[in-house]
Structure formats: C-alpha cells, structure tokens
Length: 285
Image 1: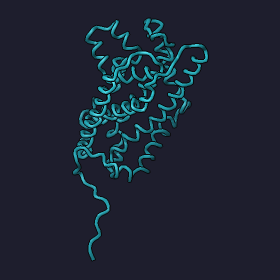
Image 2: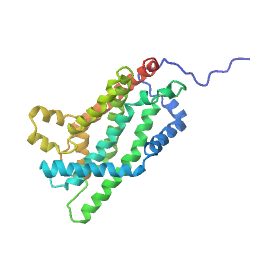
Image 3: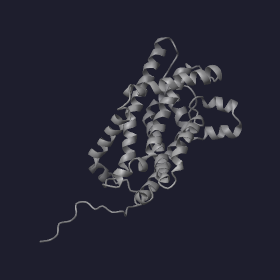
C-alpha cells in the first residue's frame, strides 16, 4: 500500500515574499477568532466600554480646536475647526491603532507562538481588520457632525474624488501594517523600541498635518520642516482624506500615487522582515 501524500507541510523554509493566501484561508476561523478577541478584550474591564470609541476622537478634536485654532490661530480654510480636526483625527486614529498594535505582535503573542503553529501574519491582519470596526464607528461620528453643520447652514460639499476613499483606507492599513511589522521584528532584539514607539507616534502625528492644513505649514514653518511635512506619505493621506470629505485643502495625483507606491513598498519590506524574524524570533524573545 502506497503512503498517502501529506495534506500539509509545516516548514521554516519559505519564499522571501509569501503571503500564502491558501493557508491564511485555511485558518480563516482563527483569523475571525483573533478579530473577535481584539474587539472584545480591549474594553472588557472598562466602565464605559465601547463608548471610548466615541469619546477619544471627540475629546481630541475639542482639544485641537481650543489649542491650535483658538489659541494658535490656525486657519482651516473656512471649514468649522471642530469638523476639520475630527476628519484628520478619524483617519489618523486608524493608522495609529494599526501601527501600535501590530508593532507588539511578537512580544504580546510569544506565549501562543511558542506553543502552536499557525500563519503568524494572521495576527497583524486581525489587528487591521478589527480596527476597521473602530474606524467605521468614528467615521459615523464624523458623518453625524457633518450633517449637523450642513443643516445649520455651513457650506459643505463632498469632492468628486470621493471614489478614492477605499484606496485611502487601504493605504493607511498598508502603512500601519508595514511599519508595525518592521518595528515588531526589531523589538524581538531591541526591547527599548517598545518605549520609543509611543513617543515616535506622537511626534509623527504633528509631522503629518493632523492638527493643521498643509497650507499653514507652508506659511509658518521653516522650509526644511515644510518639505518634511509635505512629502510625508501620511500627510498626503490626511490632506487627501479631508479633501475628499470636506472639499478643502489640496490634492495632487503625484502625491496620491507617490503615497500609494510608498505604502505598498513599506508593506512588502515589512512582510519580508516579518517572515524572516518569524523563523527564529522565539530564540531571541
């Protein structure tokens, strides 16, 4: 009797770039379980629970409006400052959550990784998918305030480039995943990076034109800082996000495709490093 062929082969030898969609699909139930875990456990032992999804963007928008627009006299191009800030924060929060949670992949899941095999890339994928729920809730908040201002006579208008909205969400996800997988791989050897991530994310927010439009950066920042802000891929995403939803700010096809290419490249680089680290991280964590 001939030996039957193996159904699955688990090996540390993989291609440099191997998303292995068939294997991920095979573990789709586990992916959904991780997504459910990410959603349920975050606010499970909190008093307000999922209401934090609403409180965080609203509170941050109020603070930005008071500090940057009222005290700092930052112009928002005729848009209500609160709505302007809420649009930027909604986009930024999705990227930030994808980045910070993905950057903890190896350290926060080492107990599971050391006991059972499954495609490790499922964990950062689950983070990205579960954060879409939070992003969707915060987007609904933005739409509610958009309707409120529109009904109160504020001249608002959606831009014809609204069809690009899914691509902007995809770019945020790819940037967060790519950078997060790179940082997660590096933290297996350099623990100090976990401390620096929080500080770096805050600094990156101010360099990504979240609390101000790019036009204000060009008018008030030194030339070197302006170039750093303008060519930051995240700036292009935040500015484009506001442009298609509020019809304010600036948009360029060069900036759009430049950001899309950078997002894909960072994701692929992060995936390469992640796959390489996956094979030996348990020896260094």
